[in-house]
Image (cartoon, rainbow, N blue to C red; front, top):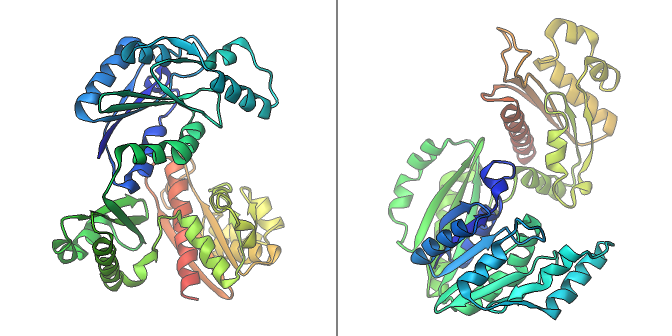
Length: 414
């Protein structure tokens, strides 16, 4: 099934806010076998909203909108939808009760603008927003359905997961089964991997697709199948998964669509290993990535952000002669850093990193983007130098990912 998404808000068109709702909806609607046909971003303008809805309904029977449902005067979506679908504004007691409950949970006092959220078009069915004050509205016109949701990502994501997706499945009575299988692959560029899998792709059934989802440093391969016979679909996905495993071997580091930091954490926890980090150019970003994952306290003990040479020497025990001779961005410095942080925090594994993220600070021998990384697992240490392109944040991102990959590969081979 195809659907359209309309994202509403002036703030999106001037770049003040970035739309994340459409991407989240697409990722989470796809597992039920539905595909986003188009995404439109429009201003808080009644004519623009109407035109976008007209165009969307020409393409699909289902339209999802986000934004424009707040209590302020520039949030005009509700009134515009009333004009499109008919009816009048009514004060809905169930919505009023929901608004009061949400406000009370936040220990706030209700004001007239928030209370006005209880006014809804009589032509809609309200889905109560359990995490916000703006009601979610379900409109129908013939076989067409429009669901209007708030623009706050947390509210959209929560209500889509708990209420809207289940109700959409029930309404449209989807009969096809869908199966996904994701493989996280390292050590290949996208083009080299595509050549490697050329023969494999030639005999994939028409109802199964292989997608390449590259990120710097790794590629996610996703098998997606849609079929009316669940057993046939599952068996074919299983056979293809086994074949991919045979072809790619240890280059597959996960059979789930997980962040690299979570894959690393899972391996640490499985082996009952602990890890620490010593970070210069990444400024704690590796530790930040690791601690995004619930349960990381089982394996992550701490980090030293050693931006200055004084901290490298006084906390981590880096020799002053090493810094004088080789510099902070060097092989010997990161080796001494990784040994120092592992000893200081008492961990089985450690990551140390030092580099030049830019835009300034580079030299002819060590240009911007030069990063040394050292990883340790028990008594084994691996060290490498990288030269990352791009701006400061891109260098930090790539350095963090490579550090996690190096550590993971060392642990897997330990």
